Length: 199
Image (cartoon, rainbow, N blue to C red):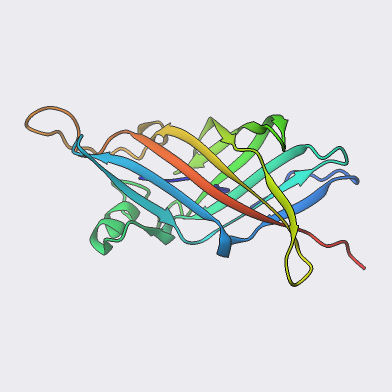
């Protein structure tokens, strides 16, 4: 299940308390993607994504990332197979009816825009919260679009074990191994727009 999560996502969009000098940048979901992938029957890869998500980052006056948070709507999962998507939303996997959101809240951030960041934070799925580390590629931009918006972009990646979050459905192959791997690769393509100062 090619997740990411942003939050978000990645990963996901409650902000940490802002400092007076911090800049807020919000995710442009129309130019971002929360994707995931898992191994199927030990021989192939199944990819998927979440179509509804939100998130934001905060950058201090020195140009350093200080917060990254996001939220994902579980019912927006899409693996290009309606039957499989319905199964993913059921209790065997995400139980979207009981736990409709997946969130990520950063706790510790190291690195720079030029070299990339490691972002340690709390990932919550099915009301189970675990510490996860996102690797962020170096930021691209800033650029200004035709409407005067300032934009930057990066890609966040990580790997999680779905069993850690109670996403536990599994079946064994006659030859050994699992139908769906426990390891989930997450790739979140993120484009942010700088929030404009209030007039």
